[in-house]
Image 1 (cartoon, one colour):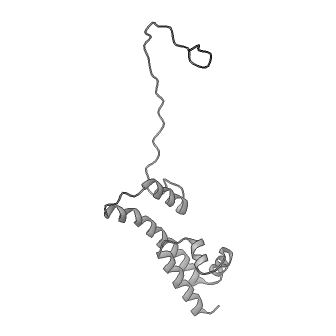
Image 2: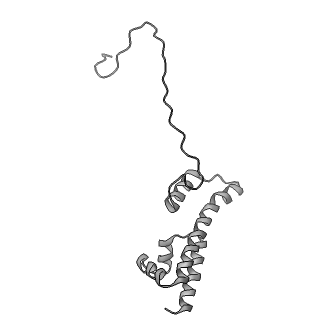
Image 3: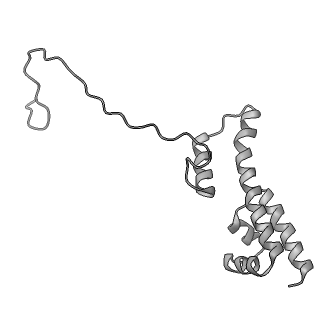
Length: 126
């Protein structure tokens, strides 16, 4: 592969990353397998750099979705967006999301009214 071909592919990779596409989508758009894309990444420094930058561009595209929707007055599905972000970029809680609150045990004190408790279930007789 010539330097010019590598630079042309690198430019296309970066363009695809700016559209929010992940590595598999980039490989599919280039009509390559993921294995072939990894080989090109190992052999061509320009493509390796473009793939790293494309990953950052893609994450920026996805992160902007929520903000742009809110600024436009839409009510986006925050849970679905958060799950998509976690699926694409790692576990939830890593990127500044609030940690899950600790679980609290509660004990209820119910006063005895002196009545016999009702039986429930199939043999209760009612």
